[in-house]
Image 1 (cartoon, rainbow, N blue to C red):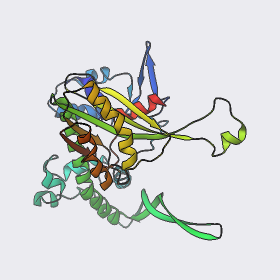
Image 2 (image 1 turned 90 degrees about the horizontal axis):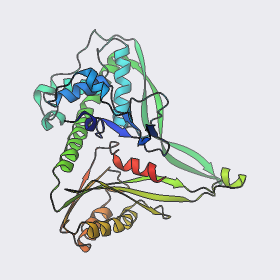
Image 3 (image 1 turned 60 degrees about the vertical axis):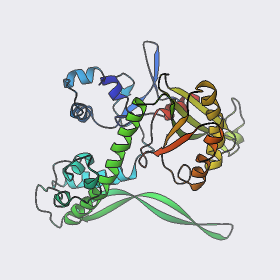
Image 4 (image 1 turned 120 degrees about the horizontal axis):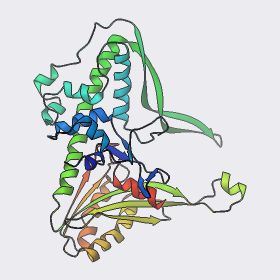
Length: 352
């Protein structure tokens, strides 16, 4: 496998969606990507996939636009499952109870095989007996760690009380024994999450490598709404809520013989439900029919928000709109929750 292509895989690095998140070297401007792990761990992952290369060469061949995440790189689309498990793993490790805080390593230690569904579903008897290997016996000493928790917030407006759902970062305190039990509980549920993440990422890569002659792989995602601004505007407009917004659906089309094609549809309507999805996809389907008349099958890939792509209205439109456009079969695949980043995010940044 090409090392540079490995660095650009979506399970190895994530593309930055910001319009200013670019790196330029010798006149070549590229959208910045941030590594999902340390280079040392990624080198181990590369060799575990059957490749042989030295660590120094692996570092030297890293593309200049693929960078390790720094403190200044603020993360705003992280996975709650990964973060909560990582918080408690770090606390338990800092207390000297375990020797590693890497969530993937802890999960793999509790699985016979990383790609075994029975192990991920906790149906394997051998995995259930593994547990967490401790460096010492827990005591009643208190440990603290952060957790992202969902809750509600009450406020009063126009004399009426309203309640809204919020997500807050809460500091938890418990004994070492309870923290270890909590970690084991998190690892048990994290295994399935990690398994689906690895499986879906692998299937997406295989799907792109083995595209049929009459197939088109369609990767779709809504970009963050764009705030429309005037080049010159008065103070009341700049600090007020007078700016209009535009909705952007970003799409990457993969076909058998052609290079990937990037598309973006823009609308003043901010609807992100099934009606909005297929209104944005209508010109994309027309483009595929015009440019690739041999395409008969569409394979969609997207993230899985229940308010957008997983609604029953989307499945209804999926069973009608593509066939009305002349396609004979369709399928829709979802990435694991909070892990749908990919090339489509770079399109949104470029358009903005």
